[in-house]
Image (cartoon, rainbow, N blue to C red; front, side, top):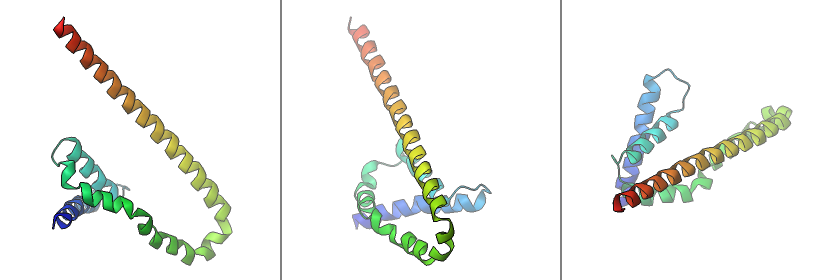
Length: 130
């Protein structure tokens, strides 16, 4: 029953994303709205990580299986893709590299920021003790 509850929580955020996607005329996928809602709820402690941990871990573990329908769709449209497959490949490679580089830089910036904040807190604690 715990897994059903956790899955329903995740589905509720996904549904919220669908609603916002319907209401706003922006070209942003509903899943992005949902994941932003979930992130904000976790970040502001409106939702505890433990309340979705097991189900989210399960969904991450089976993620490769979830890509099978997309792969089948590509195979079904191979007649259209065949003409420009090299262009698609180049675009996919470059965009993947760009996403990896940007994600790495953002992660490093956040880690540096957290480290500086921890150092400042330690200095403040040392000044209070002295």
